[in-house]
Length: 304
Image (tube, rainbow, N blue to C red):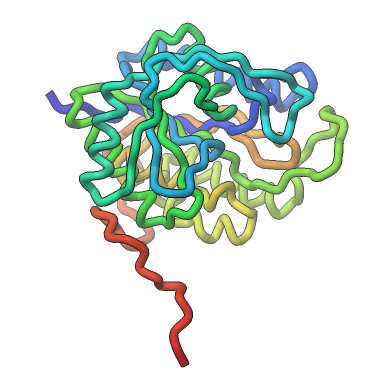
């Protein structure tokens, strides 16, 4: 039986909703929304959670977490004062191997990682602790290649879908990311947190409006402009991946559960459920790539 993607979420990539929700009403709202998403997942028949977190960065290719039970601790790179994230998670190691192979088959450079003490990123840990606190559903996690372009990231999403379909699983895809990504560089009172600029807030709200309408592919194709205007987190690669993984269309029932600043950045909780025929045709037509064939050097300077 062919597997399928039965839903998707966009979640914040910082630990504040998990570690300090009492310090800011928006952080508490984000946490409550993430916990409600977890209850939805528990009521579903999903048997696999797939996570792309912009906080796990790789430089060469893409890595897949294949330790069946990562058991360690992590401290946020920027927010030491919020303490240690202790974690013991449940990963689907056989699926990680399948996922890695599917990505390699599409031309990507891939490898699995599995050793004690490997630092699971804070975005992934916070997401899994709030979505899947009892580790009832095994997870798969892939790294965010900091140098990958849109084509490479879309290929990774298609490989993710390949692996799910081959496995027969019912999966939920989770993009762990910020929207606008300008942090305050000096200490602020957490109670006074706000989006870094009105322009960033305006762009965040426009993206969230589209996602609330289920227009995931439109958002994916607008990601470059969002990044130029609002300093999108990692060029919004997590949304490129999510759109390609879930099927590159706009036919979703979307719901924005929460939106709030985290230290100046735009954080949101969004849910997406496939709803065929809901949103109509695509509005944009950027390149659609099935196999990664290396850097095209489109930005290389031509000899004079």
